[in-house]
Image (cartoon, rainbow, N blue to C red; front, side):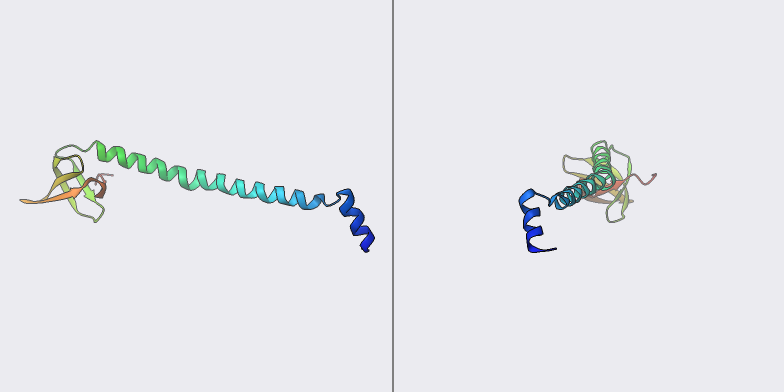
Length: 105
């Protein structure tokens, strides 16, 4: 290509292939975020919501497991923590956020 051909293309706006490339790149980035949302963020939010519902529905006598792997039975429930019987007369006060699941699951 000669200098005059390049100048002529610049003057007439013949550089549209780069714009198409920019739009396709932008579309790929948006598509990537949509896929990440549906495969990573949305399921994680659903799982967190189920865990919050489980923690709010704790009842006395229910068997639970803590994040550290301690199995016990709920004896007392307060707003932020629970009293959990581990073995015999051994009780632990545990924050509700440390309760992970029901051991039957």
